[in-house]
Length: 246
Image (tube, rainbow, N blue to C red):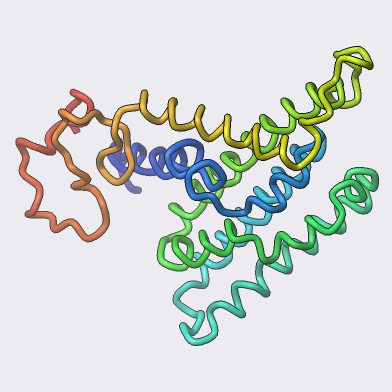
């Protein structure tokens, strides 16, 4: 039975939280923007798209991580696309069967999850090189990071542009600002969220030990990252993370 490792737990937590703020796929990596801005005219669409993306990226990363050593490098991209397409088809049929109105509202953007840069980028850059234990927190972090941005943008746009939240009237007719439900309004709200994310990121402590928040003065300098030689980390520098012994 393996003993509990606080350092490993902190590293996995760092992988998960990176997708929420520091490496948020929309606000920091700037990928998958087309479908994101198109579906954020309502909160329901944002929630539906976020959950759909999270499901597809999670299942795709798990499968690809498990079979990463069996997938020939020369055909890895076609194999990745087939796996992603399989889970996209599953979520597309689920929405059509159980949430037909939501499926109709999001239209072609659900099938287009297959070629979404966020999923392809994570399975190629992370899941295909890491064990499943690290792929799961990465997928959840990226999926939830994508979701909270979609829901946040949709909340602002629907409330100010349509005066509703989930079809509940909040702002009376005549006081809505139509600008927020048209494409320029989407870009404007998106830019505000980028500014907010940068502000939050500036207030967070710099990550150490492979993306973990431990403070600049902990001196670890990413010693726990892959490729760091065991004898390359000095005990005086890496004996503590955030003031706590490890």
